[in-house]
Each structure stands twice: as C-alpha cells, then as structure tokens.
Image (cartoon, rainbow, N blue to C red):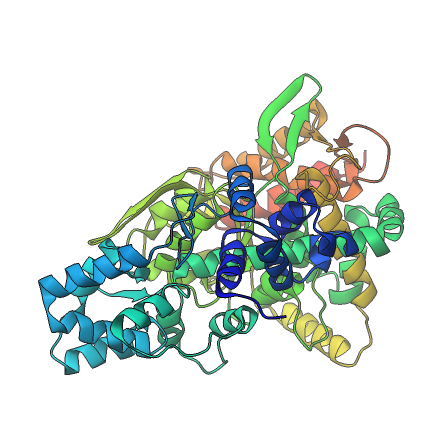
Length: 594
C-alpha cells in the first residue's frame, strides 16, 4: 500500500516525540486493531506502531493525543505539515518560517549564506569539522551565519562548546530546505535504517567524527531510552518466564550466600571487591531506611571506589563483573539498563549529559577516574554530584545547569601505595573530599594477590568454574528487587515496596567499633563521620538481598550483615588513617569469643 507524504511525516513526528510505551498506550486507547496482537509495548516494532498510528489518527485525534500525553517535551519537529516546539503541537507546518528565515539570512549575509546552506544540504544536513573546513576554503565565516539561521529556526545546534559549535538540519526540514535552494531531493531513507546509521559508530571511527553527526544531549537521551528499554524488556521477560524461579532463589539468597558464591569463583583474598560491587547494585534502588519510630531521612544509595596499584583487578570488579565481558567467560551480574559506562567520556561531557538523568537513579561506571581531575574545577562539581546536590557549571561561552544529579558512581583509579597507606596521584589537594563521599577499598599488589589473580584467570579460562547460572540468577534477582523498590510499572501492585529497618543494635555495634578505632589513632582524624553513614547504607543495601526471605513489611538487618558492615568500617578506617592501626587487632577485640 502506498503511504502518502503527510502520513509518513506524521509517523516521523510520533516516533520523535513519543517513546514505545506511549505509542503503545495511545494505540490501545484509540482501539487500533494492530495493537491487539501484543501483550505489551516491547513486543511491537516501534516504527510499524508509529506508522499504524499515523495512518489511523486524524489531525484532531492527533491533537487530542498530544494534549493527553506529554512525550518528550524537549524535542523539536519542523515539517511540511506539522510543527512541535516547546511541548506543543501545531497543525501548521514550518515551510513559511523556513523560507522567511533563509530570505532574511540572505539579506544580511548575501550569497555566502546560500553557499553555506547548499554545502550542508548536499552533505546530509550536518555541519561539522569537514563542512567548517570547506567554508573556510570558500573564505566564509560560518558561525555568524549559522547563528542567525538557528535564531530563525532553520537549523538546530547539535554541539555547543566553548569555542567550537556544530549544527544540523532536522530530518523533516532537510527536504524543505533543498526545495527552497533548488536542490533535487533524494528518496528518504527508511527511518529505522537512518536511526541505525546515526547511532552506530564503527570501531575505528574517531570521537571527532562521531560528534560531528550527533547532538550530545540528544544522543544521551537516545542512550537513556535504550537503557530503559533494556531494563523494561528484561523485567518483562523475567515476569513471563522466570518469576517463580527468581522468587524461589530469593527465599534462600542472602549476603552470606553471595559471599560464598564469589569465594568459589575468586578465592578468599579477592572476593570482597566483587561482593561490594554487587551490593552497590542493590543500593541504587535508593530504598528508604527506617527505624522502629519512623523515617530516618536516609536511603540506601552510595558511591564506590577501588584504588591502588595497576593490575590488581579494580576494573574487573567495577566494570566486567557488572556489565559482563562480551564473548568472554564473565556474564553480567548488574542491573540491566541501569549502569552507564563512562569510558572515554571527558568530565565536561559528563557535566553536560548529567542533565538528561535528572530525577533518575543510575550508576555511572568511571574507569581511570584520575583522568577527570586533569581539568580544573572538577572536585567541586563531583562533590556536589555525590551529595546529589544542584550542579551549575560556568564556562567561558556556556552555562550548564542548574540541575540536580540523582545518580551514583563506581570508579577506579591508580594511587601510589607505600609501606603504610597510600598517596593519590591526583594533583588537586581537595580530592580527599571526593574519597570522603564514597566507600573505598585499597588494592595492594602483594605476592598473594598476584597469585590469586593468576589462578582465578586460569580457572575461568579453562572453564573450571561456571558463572552462567549464578550470574543469571543474581542478575534476575537484583533487577526484580530494583523494579519492586522503585515502583516499576510492570511490577507495581504485585509486590510490596519494603523499607530497611535499622535498630539500636546496629548503632551500638558501630559505636563499639568507633571506640576501638579512635583509641588507636594518636593524632587528628583523617576521615569524617560520613564513613559511618556510608557503612549504615552498605548494611541496608546488603539486606535487600533478603527481600524474599520472609513476609514482613520491612527488611531487617541481619547479624551476619551487621558483622560484615563493622568489618568494612574497621578496614576502611585503617586505610583512610594511613594504616596507623592494624584492623586485625580491632576486629579481634570486637569479635573475640566471650
């Protein structure tokens, strides 16, 4: 069946403005037969679903749907038949505005503006480094022209830095501009193919070339939607195929079960870093912490750092264990679609894309954390981010924010490890303020650790240990608990959201540890009370593993979890104090048999 130009534009509009969940909801509300064949939105092809809506909805019905469903209010659409800006749909196209914008720009800048527009239109509608160089060859200064065209809504910015900017023509606008310039229009590519072409970068593509074609915020929103789709699809598949098995597994799962599983894989010396990394995955559900009298104002979420000498397994615990190793022997253990890997991302880009995650809780995995502090001013920004405060960053030609960052970090970085303690290799003297806001673990490359790492690698390579079943069970469990505790729509109403209950017993145990630690530190303190706060959060996050253990309307902190938390407190206090006391002595005093 031939589809007319207006319907195709309507399809593109719907696909641009709405995620799959809204497209499915609108289709169901309108009683469109196509949507009856699917149980939920993840089974439908979003391009086909958008076309079905485009064919079925009259302009009046389209307007009503747009009034009822907000969609992506930040996006822009300027086509021949429809315009969408500032969250509002207009049934009047943008042809006249685009024509007037081109005419006004030509009056001000002459034939240079037309020459520049033709260059952009003939190269696919983007203005990046290649087009910039071409403009300079023609002795055209493109920035003031493109600035004017942006003001007149002919082009949109795709990247805006301090001294370098990029622009592009919207997909629906490009044919209108080509018509106005007298350039023959080529047949429009299928939307799905176009999306794949712009979102996929070949392994040998340079970052500069990739950024020529992508608006950083638009690209991040697309990544965010992909991650949301990954989580939703996983939860949907789990509910349909593995729910009873996951609940059965959850009835016996606990912190001690997880510790034994990881010890079987990596040995007694190495397991605890992986243990911390998986516990942190549970923490990012950011569950309410209560006491018998009521709320405490605390939640479970915390950030996590592994630091020490190179080659000690830091990246494995923070990245490979959580995300998996493609084609390797390690399956992912982390929450699907909730871990944003930040390898190769500059701190400036992180500050920009952080705006996309407002009101959302993710974990940002940052390898080589040191590199971020080669840029001035990063300590203050990250300190605010870790406090989940309001970020505002001012550059010479750009102001980012303000916005509130609601996510967490797991990072690793190299330090200089000495006989006692360690020295950071980060020049900023205020970096200890960042460490103070995380749970940290020091890695020493001792002979014993080296041997354990080598043995573990051999066991995995030879297939002597299998992680497939264990990883799948843990991943399903952490994903389901996360979905329940965050009120995911696919499980809402099916399981209760449970807070974590803390009691006076926990604080008595931490208090005894504090007394034992302080009497062994002769001088001033090298860590703050935030350490105890993070230890409480760790214990509560570890308790989430026991969500399905009983039918209480809260989750208690078990004696086993409390002991693990106290041990972590003592060990971390020793490291932060530059090892002024031996943790073994404190632990012997605290846990000696009466």
